[in-house]
Amino acid sequence: MALEGRQPPSRTPTFELVFFLTMEAFGKLHPDHRYFSQWSQMTETERRIQRRDIAETYVQTARRYEHSAIFVHGSRYAAGGSDEETMRLLDDIRELAGNDYFLLMHGDATHGLPSGDRMMEFVESLADRPQEIKDGSNRAVDNGLARAEKFKQHGLLDGYALCSDYCFNTGPFLSPAMFDEFVTPFLARLTAGYRQLGFYVIKHTDGNIMPIIDSLVSCRPHALHSLDPQGGVDIAEIKRRFGKQICLIGNVNCALMDTGTDEQVVESARYALRHGMPGGGYIFSTSNCVYTGMDLGRYDLILDVWRREGNYD
Image 1 (cartoon, rainbow, N blue to C red):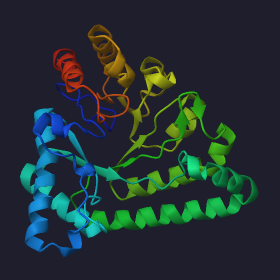
Image 2 (cartoon, one colour):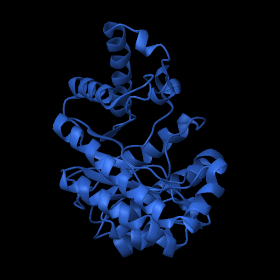
Image 3 (tube, rainbow, N blue to C red):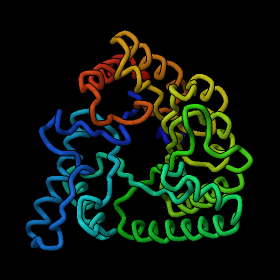
Image 4 (tube, rainbow, N blue to C red):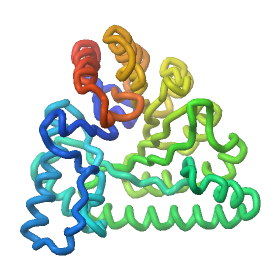
């Protein structure tokens, strides 16, 4: 309901794009931190045991913290992981949890911030070989949609999180004009293709998205995450401008959860709820994720605020 811009009948939903504190919460490594180099040498029985434990960790997290969705990190735990292995993991999660949770996974095919070791190469390519960049983006979108067709046939996935980051705290890596040339058309085509297949689409990017927000919204994802206050993104302004067009997710300040006082953390959670909730179309979360090193007590603190003040009735 929230992803479709509607108001749920009781409490606004919550989830985290990633909840890395499974060791602190349950004494278990997060699935994204597991890697079995000997996967190919395991028997199917051994693989099934590991896969089941990973599925149980996802479901245990969602149940304890009352999440409405589970972001599944695919089969990266398995050496040479495949889509088929990811589908087996989805099977296990559904077997354990039924239809209690919305299941989503990575699915971006657009150019985000280049890593430092390839930044100059990427910039040179934009300037010297722009058509080559665009042709590559079209192939990436084609491949992403072909992969989505397989997951559509499998039948257990609900949506995709598009996790290419475009922005620093000071603004986007590409100018708005370059963003509209090298990203917007491909993001729009990818999103339209996912929607046509029946998937929900959440577009994630950190940082100051304000110079490109019109372009992001024009691509018609169902939701925008993470509305980063460290990048100067004010959920009150975004709700006023775009609240009728797109679901909003996030805005609880992760920096304050590390360095602020309890009072500042509580006020950040309240601010997000106060301005995100009216009329529906809002999902409560941090402005990034629950990352390694965060104090688990701080996450419990914002959930306490959500339980008290995140109710429509």
